[in-house]
Length: 73
Image (cartoon, rainbow, N blue to C red):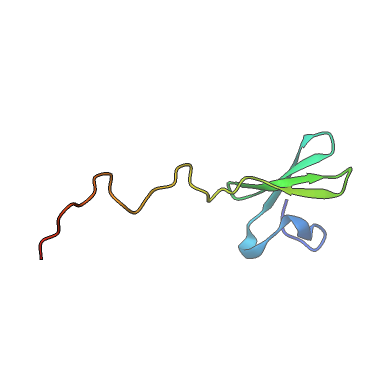
């Protein structure tokens, strides 16, 4: 679908497309680029956010595994 005045909800900034597809009866998945943004429940008129694609699977610490016992200066 091309960006147009007729379907403005499908076109977002810089000519990138917003994807909308039905995944269940009256439940629509909204995507942008490679990211699932959330779900729209057409029957209830509700939007539920999807998982945050930028949250790391594992939180990394700033400290190395082995601590420093002595620092020479």
